[in-house]
Length: 108
Picture 1 (cartoon, rainbow, N blue to C red):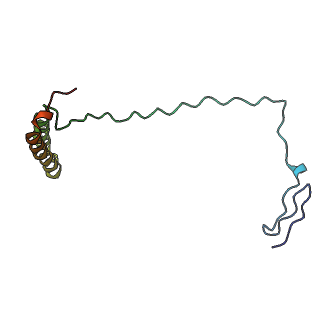
Picture 2: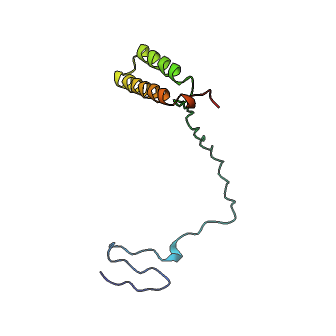
Picture 3: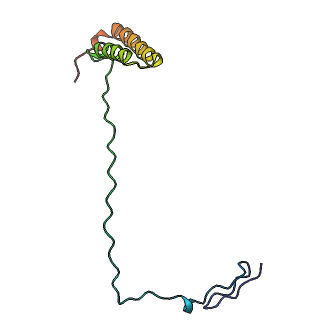
């Protein structure tokens, strides 16, 4: 690679096979014409986080609500794998509640 001479103008670049323009050849924008202001862009809508509702085994309504969900999901055609997972949670919650009856309560 050949070194380029450093001056106020750009020296030819032998790697590109053409010379770069002298900076006096680059047109400057006219300043007497005002630059139009761009229209404000429509802001992207802020994504709203998906609402969730959490139930805990300590909630007195937990087993009833989960049983209703399982029944509704089965009627709606939800996969057996998903239903089986919910049934396993139902069994675990029922066991936990039997061991912790003093912790089962109405929602706060």
